[in-house]
Image (tube, rainbow, N blue to C red):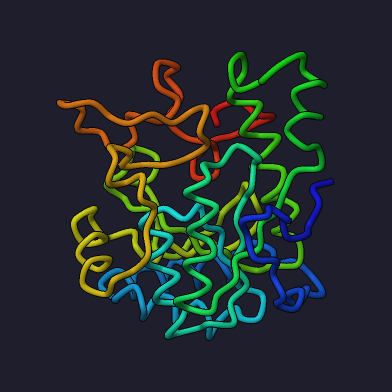
Length: 268
């Protein structure tokens, strides 16, 4: 079972926020709930991200949460949360392989917005995990590595919650193009809220620049998408896919959090 405590990197502040409320029972995808979500998604299709967040907060708080990898989209949502629902519990899936620049960004977000993102880690540390598998598993089986160090942790974090927010955009990939504004996430048994589904990359960066939202400096060094350092590289001239630097050369394009199908580590 993943440890549900804040990571204690020397470079990171230790979270002091109270442990989030735990729902007495999980939501079930009843026909009534599915109809409600479909209607809300259709109604919010033309809404602003702030309006979508406000609806989700009114409907699901205090059992609403957000997962962020501190990408541009996540940082924009955090800036919105600070205005609309600052008490929302936010966490990061700290695989142990994140760039130092990503870890530092957590503190910058806390300083500017007062939102302290909890860093949730897998049960095994990186040395323990690599010893178990005879070396870095990301080299031989990146799907399983993502499953063990991200998917399992999010499943644990989802317990006691009713809904989670993500920063995906429909224009990022084929899987993400199918995202609803409000939908049911079968993988994690949660309502999934995507406030930025209709945003473009330009929309995101316009908001960042207009409001001086903190962002990862790696984005200024040729990394349009930042994940774990072993599986992320800068893109080259002529590469138009903003996720081209993720798992380069493997055919893998997603960690599995936002794919349509996933089973026992496959397809992630």
